Image (tube, rainbow, N blue to C red):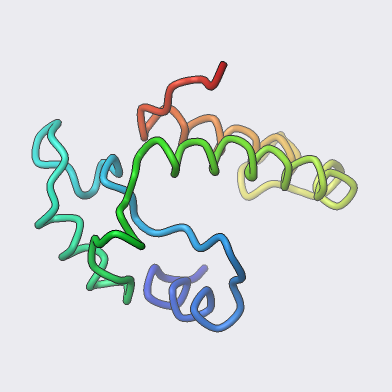
Length: 115
C-alpha cells in the first residue's frame, strides 16, 4: 500500500502527458456542491500540482473526457495482464476491479456520458 504523497512523487518522475491534475469537480475540492478555486488550489499544493491557471485550468469536461476515453483505452490495452490477475478484493479479477473503479470515478466526478 502507498500514500497520496508517494503516488504524486512517482507520477512526477515517471508520468508522461497527459498529466491528470485535480479537477474542479473532484469531491475533495468542492465547497458543499459548488466548485471552489481556493480548495482546489490548496489540495493541489498538498500534492505538488500547479495552481489553477490557463494551462492547468481544472476543466471538469476535459478531465471527464480524458478519463472516459483514455481510461477505457488503458483498460483494453492492459486486459491481457489484468483479466486473470487477482483483485485487491476477493472474488473478482483485477480487470473487473479496475473497470468498477473507472465507472465509480466517472460517477463520483459527475461526468456526463459523451455522445
